[in-house]
Length: 385
Image 1 (tube, rainbow, N blue to C red):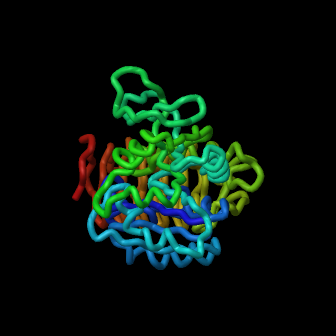
Image 2: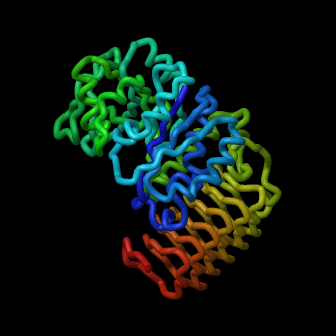
């Protein structure tokens, strides 16, 4: 069985991280975002994944080769020379999808920003049981007025879609995970097309669209605030799994690069006060007397000084946090260096290779890569260029 992942374009919502890497290769909990999806698909028996890419595909090739070897799965790239929406890429990749060597009549389709429990075997069974032309996964939200709501009956048959409803019609929204019969591709014109606004409503009108409700956690990691919220959901879910989960049995636990399957206690776990859950790469160094957690991810070769406070924060590979600094609700990117007695908070994102001087305070600040920051910023949503 095949799968297509809609990678899309520039990743503007996740800047400044995507100034350095294509969004699919940005590490989420010490593993590239796209690898979470590749692993789930491989575990579900998919043997060929097509990535529909519209931006810097050449930067992804080496990482994809590593994933091919690791998961024993074929990964191809379909390149969009112009934006094709969310349905157009399926038509563009038709020759790869309709490979006669694949006997399956359906394929998985993912939005690349989604992180969840990926109930793929359950999706496939539901799809086959209903003989659906298309199956979409939906998730319940507290405030559906911000989304497009999927209206369906008790069997899961989709009746219609209501965009940002002003009165109650339901609380289920599209979660960005689908199974489509391959014949759906013939519905799509070779031009920019929306699968949500054009393809799915047309299938629903003919009675061929079904939805399955996701019971576990779900998150869109396409922008920094949501990325950090997703870290909390992911770590909580991994903690509950037990067994081979890196978070089982308490924390801190570690994960090797490109993997979240290795489980052990970090060698520096007696130096600081850890508040569950925390995920640390084994190569990271943690100083004494600090307080780490909850909902903290520390990547490969990071250095955390003495007396440091980290909470609801991600340190990407090679990041350094100096003595007695406090970083909360923020992302510190690859190789960035935070000085001593620094405070960073409120959805700040410190770009690759940034240097923040001692005793600086950064509030809700985006710092572009390779900048030297020597002055405090308290202005919300400021971008330091």
